[in-house]
Image (cartoon, rainbow, N blue to C red; front, side):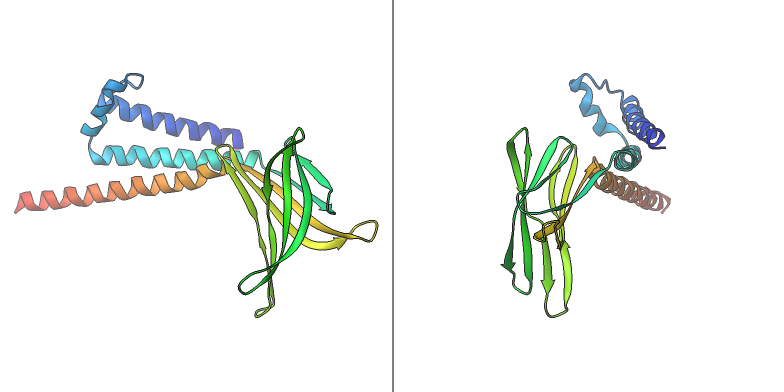
Length: 207
């Protein structure tokens, strides 16, 4: 399950760091010893980097699978929906003209304990040339995760007035998935480069 994946991820990250530190004879809580890392072979550092990247990717994926939050509501202007202790209030929906589209843009105020934190502006865009409608999600990112707010099509409320479908989604630690993929790619590329350089040196020595 997600807990096992998170445990594996933490083990990969800590094992990669501790093994690399042991090879370099570095004491992690003594910054004065950290320059010894530069004396390690590139292949060793590359392998540790790739493993740490896999750990970050796995940890982010496990958190996203275990703790995603989502709520959906049909809101008229002035109405709210709550999630994660925060209130999302649909302030208004206005029409805006883009270079090649017409959009409905919502202003949704996110607040906590009556204090406004930010304003999110998701859109529904209609492109007349292709007769296509797309959804532009409003995103707010933080070290703990990403918040997505999407504006759906207009509907009628119980009183016959205008209302809109609003979806709020929170994905914790999703940035670790992307960071882990980048770190793994860097480690893999460095390992391949070190291998090719080593082969060239062996070929030159043989000649």
